[in-house]
Length: 165
Image (cartoon, rainbow, N blue to C red; front, side):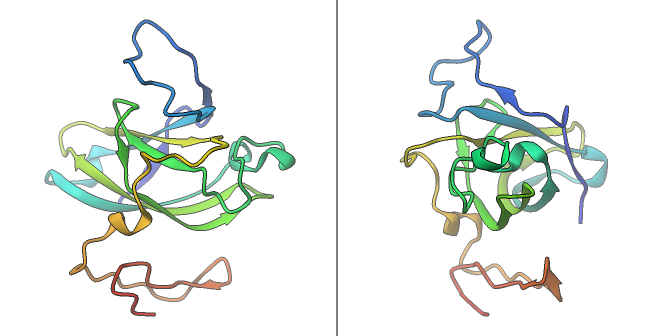
C-alpha cells in the first residue's frame, strides 16, 4: 500500500488570509491537517483512488483529551482536496478519542505520479456539516476490498455498500 505522510505533522488553526479562497472556513471546522501522498509510490496517475490513513496524533484526540476533535466517534472529521473547499469522501473506520488513533478510508479524486498530492483532514466542527459526503461514497458498488486479520483488536468489517462481512 502506498505511503501517506502527514505534512508538517501539526494541525493548522483556521485563519483567513489573502491567499485563502472564499468559503474557506467549511461551516465551522476549527482545525485542519495537511496530508501529502508521495508521488514516488505511484507509477501512473490514479483517479478516484481509495487510500487508507492510519495515524496516531495527539492533535487528533478529543477536546476532553487535549486534542481538537469534538465528537468521541470522530464524526466531525472530514476531508477536502488541496483547494481546502471541496469535500472528498472519507469513512472513519477506527477512532480512539483518548489516543488520537485514526484509521480512515479516503477517496482521493486524483493522485499524480509526477508530483505529490495534497489534501486536508479537518476536525473541530460542532454542527453537522451538510457538505460532508456520506461515508458510502468512498466505494463504488462494484468494488471489492480484501482485508486480512484484525486492526487494533477489532475485526475489520466490509464498509462498502455490498456489506460483505
